[in-house]
Image 1: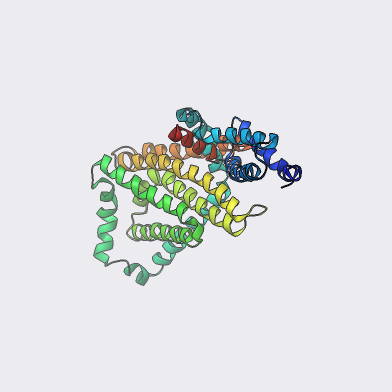
Image 2: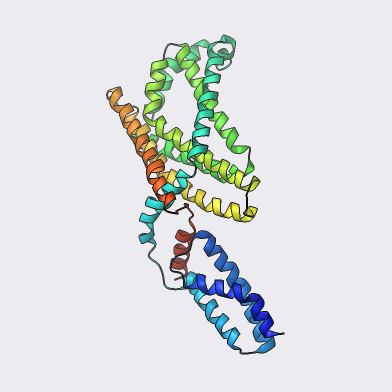
Length: 331
């Protein structure tokens, strides 16, 4: 082996390894790069020692590798100290990046739901396919409202929360398939449209909105965000841009993992509203006001705080948070 030539050929890689190993913080992409450089550097050090024995170049590379190893297995980091950064920077930035896709999903849902409702209302035969006149009358007069108070509030809130969180998780997890998210969006829009058609057909349109709006404003928005996340990961696979498909999926996947965690808390809030506020015997302006306030708070978090975090260079990448978790586990 020509050690000088070998060193010259890999000098840039070793310098980059040393640089990343000395950094205090790493983004997700930088953490991935450090691992790759560590693996290739270890192979190159082995080749140097096998052919040339102990050398200055090998010793320098060994030091760089040791520092890189400490980035993942060194002293434990305080994971709790990273939680404020997650909620104040990473999560709002990740949500902000999905704002336009979320809006598109919301528009599609509203349009499809309206089309289904109009179609069913203007075609009695279509409405009859959803049940007999007695069954639909029962739904409009009693079952629709009773659904929200048929179980204890805490139990009902927990059921709604877990069900919606599961739907949101599926949208993100299976979004890469391309067809799953549109299926969920269209199915959700159809259910809303058909329910509206039945309620309006039996002169209960006001009841429909009064019982949907308090929790539905935030709940549906969270589902729209989850659907947007699934579509984004699919698009990262289809059109990665200057990145490789693997890089695009890894980077966007980490950001969407951030979104998935955040939506668990958002849907918990909407579940509490649905379980405790929607069926409560309070004035409707109060109940709808609570739902509207929850939605406005989420939109402010997503658009105002998210815009600020995004402009500061935050992407929502979970790489640094995961690195801290790995160091704690390793420690």
